[in-house]
Image (cartoon, rainbow, N blue to C red):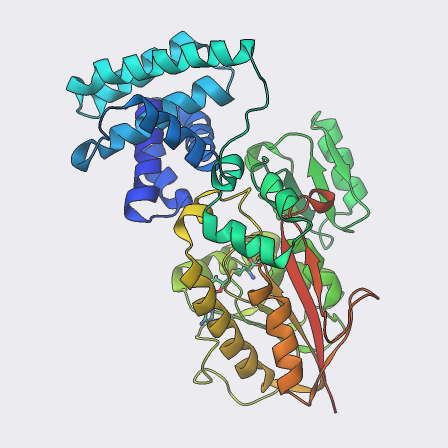
Length: 435
Ligand SMILES: C[S@@+](CC[C@H](N)C(=O)[O-])C[C@H]1O[C@@H](n2cnc3c(N)ncnc32)[C@H](O)[C@@H]1O
């Protein structure tokens, strides 16, 4: 199949079968006849999911009746075609002819004519739009900002002054951040190694181990990947380790550890390896923690375990706990635009109940004076600030240890909004157990 057919298939799997884009992309890329097109397939499917409502409404306007049943994938192919015309520099004739060819390859020869007609008509509309206005105003926020209504409403309630900024940041392309493994190489040495390979990169003051690449690229093209010099990790996720203690002999727990980004960073920052247990409920994802620890030459005990239960716990208390809770991932929409269409309003309530259950459970495993860092990659208060306010109100043995001076028990934690200093959206709150 050509790249357009593969991209349509990837989008179809997300929107019709609820698969994640990362999973569906792997299958779609494998089905492509030209391995060099992997990047293009990703660009097209990410792009369609980023701008879905605007593309969808254009398609609906052009079709006398919608494509249904087995032809549904052709609807998504039309979106792939329109995305190329509206958002990329792919020449119009190539976008149209490849998309029409994809229609045949997807077994819908009979719809090739309609596909061709719709795309040509969109081309004409675009030419006319260039001659009139540049900044199109759409009739609803869902269309204007290309996010689902329930999420826009939740953001408006949580951030009356910033909701637009968050939505706009979510449609940006995410930068590629690396985390230098300070046990192997200093950040300056690593920057020199990048410069020697003519790879443009910069450090930042917001993260001691962080390096920002000017252009995202394949990790294998960077120096030292197999030698464990660095890992790929967003700058927001890299903040966690600096809020966690690293003294010798501490007994530590990483509660929802997979794929191990924060587990590894926490260990990298300790001069002497911490006594660390990393647990996760998903065996497959936990295997990636082992892979990452091995590549970076770090150590931790690994256990498949449900953080909401105590079956796996030997009863010995921990000095420090990282709880990177399962969450809506609404802070990382720019990296995973499928989240917008896979999450629902009811997920948020379910997730916040699970977060609360896990937090209460692991709190009982913390020593007096021990520290617990609560983290999510969500921007919704129900999973973040409200969660911690309720916890502090319910537990007399818990106190907030502010990360920033402005925090109070009524407004605890550091909420990073997506785009701030190039970061993903994240939330951190540091708690200590009273002795
Ligand atoms: C946000 S991810 C963790 C990312 C990880 N801390 C890192 O930095 O690479 C959340 C993880 O929670 C795990 N999880 C979800 N429910 C869980 C549970 N009840 N017990 C343990 N882990 C759980 C998921 O499998 C997922 O790997």
